[in-house]
Amino acid sequence: MDYKIIWSDFAVQQLEVIFEYYTQKVSSEIAQKIVLQILEQIKILGRNPFIGKKEELLSKRKEVYRCFIVSNYKIIYFVDKRNTYVKIADIIDTRQILSIKCRLMKL
Image (tube, rainbow, N blue to C red):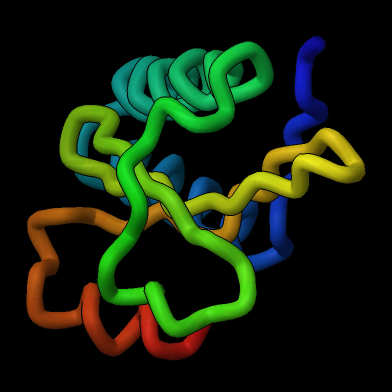
C-alpha cells in the first residue's frame, strides 16, 4: 500500500527558499535540478515510509519524527499509519548545523 505524501506549509516554504537561493546564486537550471532531486527522493517515502531513521532531537514529541539526507538537505517527516500518509515537516540545510537544533525544537 502506498502512503500519501503531504507537506507542511513550512516545508513547502523551505523548498521554495532552496529554489530561490540556487536560482540567484547559480542558475535556475541548477535550482530546478536540486529541487527535483529532493522531490524524487521524497516520493520513495510513499512506498517505504519507514526508510528514514528516527530523529533523536524530536524523540519527546507525540509523533515519531524520522529523517533522511538528500544531498545537503535533511528531510524531516512523520508517518501516520492509521491514515496512511507521510507528512513532510521540514527541509534543513545540513551545512547550517548551528540552526538545526533550534529549528527542530520549533516543530
